Length: 195
Picture 1 (tube, helix red, strand yellow):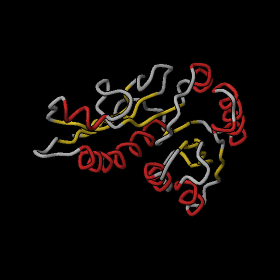
Picture 2 (cartoon, rainbow, N blue to C red):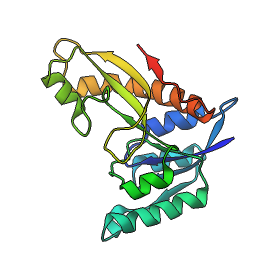
Picture 3 (cartoon, rainbow, N blue to C red):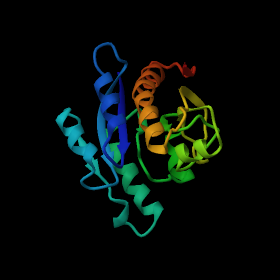
Picture 4 (cartoon, rainbow, N blue to C red):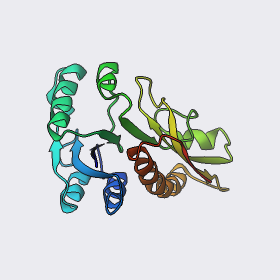
């Protein structure tokens, strides 16, 4: 049985879906939900689901290296096999990524390699895209890069706003990320592709 730590910065809706899915014949179980934001809404949601939580506030550290050293130590206490970034809003350094290489997943609200970074929905609409979506990928030192482990597509509708498109993409994130984690935890890195 694989152990999964989930890193969040906000409300944790993707974290909740991952935790809810890790039951029964799932090859993994949650061992920790960690946030860099004290009081993040997802911490209470994780506790309500019976998952241990921790906080490493990035603002308590003079630099990224010091923050990541404590983050890494806190994670190692929980001994996860897999890290899932689920709305974790910190860019991780190459050194941290290297320590967890091949075991760290992230979900991003665009069809990578398009629209890395922030404001993905507004950028997709401004470019006149016919479809948007989300991607789960293995984490590398490059931002929103790494092997694609799953994608779900969402049509762009006439009159779409960034908020409306984001809401529809989020529905697909909640389906895609659990499906990818289930496959990945079973040792299968073939991409999950959803229409």
